[in-house]
Image (tube, rainbow, N blue to C red; front, side, top):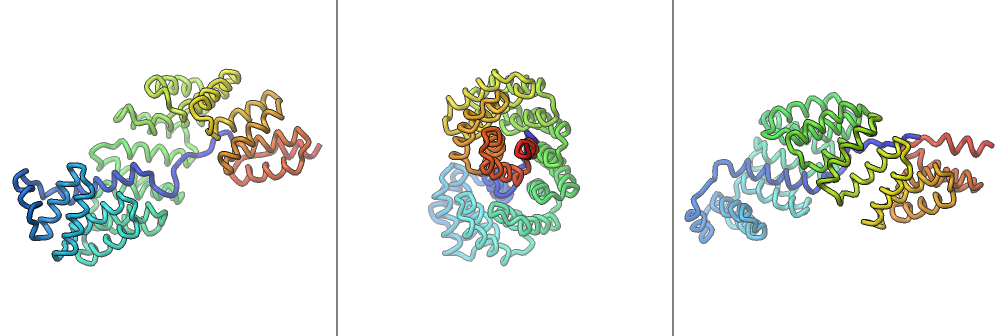
Amino acid sequence: MSRFATTARRGRWSCALRLLAVALVLIVIDSGLALAVEEVAQIAAQPTSPADYLRAGLEAYRTGDVAVALRFLEKGRDEATPSAELLVALAALYMEQNRLAAAEETAHQALELDSTSAAAHVLLGDIYASMGWHQNALQSYTQALSLDPEQAHAWLQKGILLTAEHRYQEAGEALVKARDKLESPTEAFVALGRLRLAQLRHAEAAQFFEFALAQAPEHQVAQQLLVFSLLGAEKPDTAERACREFLARHPDSKELLLYLGEALEQQDRLQEAFAVYGRVLDRDAGSAPAHSRRGRLYCRFKQFEAAAMECRTALSLDPDDALAHAYLGIACAWLGQREEARAHALKAEAAGMRMNTVWEKLRE
């Protein structure tokens, strides 16, 4: 039975990446619009042109007043003849507020005014990626890069989406370009690591996460994925050392505690692993992964009633927990509950886990 599943992100973006995209778009638009404070105040008091509304909106955004920024940009759209730049900025703010339909419509309006706006194509790609429309997003990023090959953000997101589409060679090429063009290559290294995880090349993935952490030592996603990669590379002692180092800085990280438990299990330090999963449940009694891992340990202890109880708890919290289905299937097989064992084993297999243990037991 495979203990590890690839954690390369697929589907919708995280909120952090969405906000990063918004910030990048606004920086691109704002690059030629720096104003003195007194000029900003004068324009904000009485804007007269699309550029005035755009400048006032961007200044409000810089000061953290998104509502005022939105009001200026919407007035610029409604009360003046808007520019493509203003509409891109407005679409970016709609995206930040998760108003994706409005963001998409506004980005299209920007492209109607200027079909050569690379920033508009990038933003439209970001919007489609947030919607889970990967092919549309890829088309938008490709169009943006045909207009401006220096769009590092477009290379990065194109590589991430190509990874999700299992187009690994193309993904690697895009991510290398992103790495070379980004001012800080941290996110490119993380994406390259995720690509290697998707290819089940765990040792190489670990190297990329180490590169990311050399750039940004407190990058918690890179920390977690480094430990995960080391576990997948069957280096549990190294994973344990890294995990304890990161936990010293982030003692409340449930994800790191779960990985510490995995590292201890790989070293057959089962009682220690059980105690670590208990620490997770002390912090969050609703942690399905901690319950399913305790169910796995109870199976290893041959305490199948307790295993079944833990796995049922995990499934009550997360009905799609593949590990809980797998070990509930095993527990039920040993308890003589054949139909339930078969049902859970099939669900675990559908999630990519090998369930030979159950089928062998049911043939007895």
